[in-house]
Each structure stands twice: as C-alpha cells, then as structure tokens.
Length: 286
Image (cartoon, rainbow, N blue to C red; front, side, top):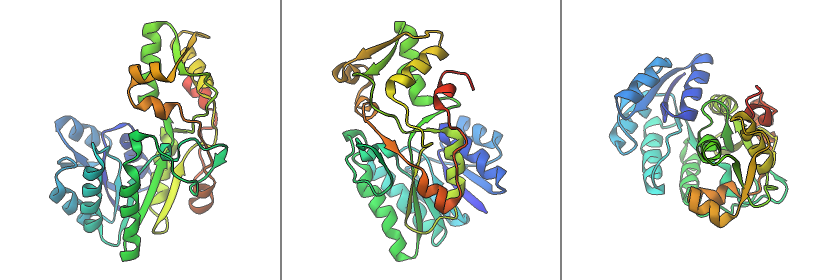
C-alpha cells in the first residue's frame, strides 16, 4: 500500500516509517527542511517538501496515496484540523489515521478504555473538536481512524528524557510530582509504530488507545530513570506548583493518574504490545 505520512522525521515518525516498510508498504513523508528530508530518506521513505501549513501539498500527497498517517504535532487545533481536512479530502475513501493522545481522558479512576469520558488538562483540550470532525468524515464515506498514544518511552525517550532525566542529572535527583502514586499509561515507541501499521485495516470511525497495558506509578518511573543516569535511588518530590514552574503546562499531564487497557486494539487489530517491562527499559536494563 502507498502511504503518505506526516511527522516522519520525529520520534514516533521514524519508528512508524520503519514499521510500515517492514510490512511491505511504500511511504512518502512530509519534510519541512533539508534535514528532515535526509532523515526520512535514510529510513526508506520518499520526502515530500512542505509543512503542515502547506495545505495544497498535503492534499496532493494524500491524493497520490492509498492511506494517510498523520503524526506531526500541530501548533494549534485550527492548524491540525486544517491539515487533517486537506489530507482527508485528498485521500478520499482511503484510510486516514489521525493522532490523538490518552491525556484527554484525565484522571481515569481505575482501568478504562476508549469509552471513558474526556476530562483533558488545558494542554490537550483542543483535541476534542478536531477528533470529532475527523471521525465525522466516516458519515461521508471516509475511513477515519484515531490512534491515541499513551506516554511514550524507548528509543530517544523524548518527553521523559527532557523533563526527567536531563533535569535529574543536573539537580542530582530525578523529580516526581506529589507523592508519585499516580500511574502513567506508558507505551514503547516501537509498539505504537506497529499499532499505526495495524490501524490501516481498522473500520471507519474506530478509535484506539495505544498503551502497553502496564501502568507503573510516576515514582516507580522516576526511580527507573534515576538508575539509568547513575543516580540509583536519588529521586525528589516536587509540588505540582513547582512542577508547573519548571515544566510548564505539561506538568498537569504528568500529574494525571491514568490506567488504560489495549484490549480493543488487541481484539480488533491483532496488535499486542511486545514491551511489557517499561521500568526495565527506563532503567536502561533492556
């Protein structure tokens, strides 16, 4: 299948290009500059020069494809919806896979699935109207699918490394918010890449949370990160207010207590996470 993909030079994108090619697909990938073009080309994808604001480029590339995978992070909900609309118009009745995220569910109060009510922190509150509009195309003959990744780890380990490992090394102790008893719905980057590949065969209007099904506490994760940077056992609690000062609005997302199950994706798509020991990976033991 011929796939057009946005965000190909990013953390999830590089893993997803690899997964798609392993499954026999050919990939064209949006590239906003020379460095991004070189990155996606090195992975086996054909670069398409442009950015998310280049709606004509997005539409034309989607029209050449049999399916679209939209991974790029937009600056605003309006930008994301405009890009999604251009690509859905282009791909027509082909599958369009849109990226959301599990933070939209807020505190889950136990283990939940895709039917849980939304209670997003302000950081991701904009996602609701975008996903509603994307999924609404199913009523017009489109094939929209939404994948909602959990908190990613593995590989470059972007968010956890930036907000926990790096400042932890500088301070001599890895932070966690409050008592650290809140759970993180983690997913390995290689597992989420396989979910995007599997989602190409999903039914129109389907929504899948992409989580590993293992939901350790934030303090357990901080202790694992501390081991990985040579600070075994050295963690420190910070208040939510302190975290907001240090991290910005993403602190409210890291403070969420989230436990989610991948059961729907496993049942519908045959997708099963392979990484079932996130603490070992975070600690650098796998």
